[in-house]
Structure formats: C-alpha cells, structure tokens
Amino acid sequence: MTARWTQRPPGSNWGDFGADDENGQLNLLTAERVLQAVAEVKEGRVFCLSLPLDYPGGSVLNPRRSAPRHFATRRGERANFILPLKIENPDFTDVVCDDAVLLHTQYSTQWDALSHVGGMFDGDGDGEAEALFYNGWRAGEDIRGPSGQGDDLEGTYAARLGIEKMAARCVQGRGVMVDLHAHFGAAREVVGYDALMRVLQADKVTVEAGDMLCLHTGFASLLLTMNRRPDPARVHDACAVLDGRDAKLLQWISDSGIAVLIADNYAVEGLPARPGSGCHASMPLHEHCLFKLGVHLGELWYLSELASYLRESGRFRFLLTAPPLRLPGAVGSPATPVATV
Image (spheres, rainbow, N blue to C red):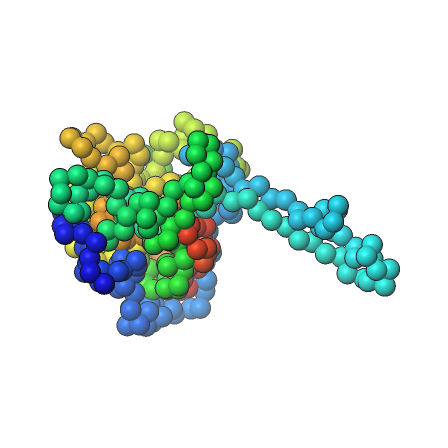
C-alpha cells in the first residue's frame, strides 16, 4: 500500500511501520519484549491497576463525560433482574439477573485510541491543511463523524485506528514505574524533561525501547478518598502532570522508544497546557504521542499500591497486561490492567 501523504509532520514516525500501519509503537511489543517482561515475575503477586469504573464521580474532570448508568434489561414487560423464571414455567427454579451499562469509554481508567486526537496538517503538500490522524488516516473517510445533522451524535466510527486494533495486539509487555509522587507529593507540579531526568537518576530507573512507561502521581488515590464526589478546587490543582509544551520532554519520548505512556492522573499532561505561540495544539503531548508517534495514552489508572510495593522491593519493572475492550470503531476504551510481579 502506498502512503496517503507526501510529507509527514516534523518529529513523526509516519510510515516507519508501513504505509497501512494502525498500531504505532505497539509494534515494539515483540515476542522478545514479552519474554523480557515475563522474566520480571518473581513472586506471582498481582495488582489490579483500575479504578472502580464509576470513579471519579460526577463530571468535574470533564463536563462531556458522565458516570456509567447501570440498568436492567427487559424480559417482556418486566425488568429482567432477580426474576424467577417460574413466571414462564412453574417447573423452572432459575432466578436470573441481566443488565446493561451506558458507559462513556473514557470516563475512568482508560486507553486512548490513536483515533482519539488528530491534527490539522498539509500531508499532500498542496498548501492546504486537512484533518489527519496517525500515519495519515483521514477524517471523514477513515475516521467518520456523525451520520446525521445538528444534534444527531450517532454514526461515529473509527474505521481505521479504532481501539479494537489495540485489543487485537493483546497489550502485554514490560511495565516501568516512575514514582513522581514519591518526589513531588500531592502538590501540583508540572514536570518537564529536566525534572523527569532527575527522578529517573535518583531512583535508578532505566527506560528502554518497547517499555510500557507508567507515571505514579497519586491522583487516582486522591479520587478514591473523595468517594465519587470530587472537589473541583482540589482535583484541578493536585499532583504531578507532564509539561506537554516542553520540547525536550517530547523529544525524549520520541528517543526513548516507549510503546505506551500511562499515568494515574486525568490526562498525563497538564491541562490547560502552558500558552503556545502561533498555530499550535491545545494538548501538545496528546498531539505528539497519538498523532505523531502512535503512542497510546493510558489515563486515570490506579498505580499507588503497585508503586508502593515496587519502591519497598527496590524494583521498578513488572509484567503488565492491559488490553482494552475489543470494541470496533471506538476511539477509547475502559481497561482493567493487571501487573504481575
């Protein structure tokens, strides 16, 4: 397949994994990397890295996302929940429960698909920018908007770069923990390249190509203390975030060759980002990772128990298994990641 573009964004890796690639840096999760990850298992102990999916609660973090709505399916005119089947046949002894959930795919612990954030770029070299996504897949053709007009929100579908592509790769590899909370505490700290390098050096953490990088900030643990009633004043001014405007940090992400980037905070990077100049992305780290590099972002993971164990054990690596839902066409997905040490 020939490339859909004649020029690629500066600093991107478009085409490096093939003209039709939809997996980005997940291509670095090779069999060799999986074996290296399995070798990190010493005790067989496991950690759940997901928040309960009804956290954070409310819509404080993002007014466009709401908590899951849980309800029963119907069986005829009845709610199909705690339903004795003897109503259908007096000889039946079964009592059944069947339910459904209306779930915002990126409300709680989640993965961003590569179709989550694109950018305006002149891929054809004709002087006109168009909406493109990772590896040059096009808005409207490959990532489709609503089929209706006005308030009709249905019909959206990522025919390319959907989250099911990530699920099919299984997403298992070597996790590497960077414990920002141990160095910066619960106060808001915008972490750039220099500060991150100091943390890596102090904790003797090494990051290699194909690693699944996890940043522990303590934010998810803070949410748990709020019992689904997040305090806006606290959650918007708490814990470490990456500085998406730091060009040195973005270059390090490129050079490191990480397969994915994960944090226990809302967006990995600080939002709103520091002011930019000229035409620029509002979410610069999202643009760099999802649009340019094909690095999936994990957000709102629960990392505190694992981070504490690793620090006490003098370790920073572990086996990470974290597939999203295999939901065709979705641009994000809940996840229930598992760490094994």
